[in-house]
Image (cartoon, rainbow, N blue to C red; front, side, top):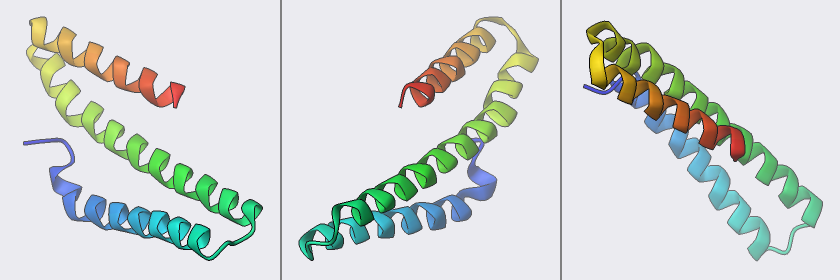
Length: 93
């Protein structure tokens, strides 16, 4: 079971809200809205995605990584490396 399983419905709702924001951006472009207004909404959408990613990462660390480190060995090392790589991707984005 994945670390986010307990909050799966909350995550799906959150992603649907973000999806709505993206559709709103599309609508703004189609309706020739002011560039700065669109950029403001892009920024809000980015923050929403980043917040979602951090929440998912936190759950991954608390569940998947913690479970693997409790067992130790190669699996623990792999999970830590995997989490570290994910953090690096988030920092670069």
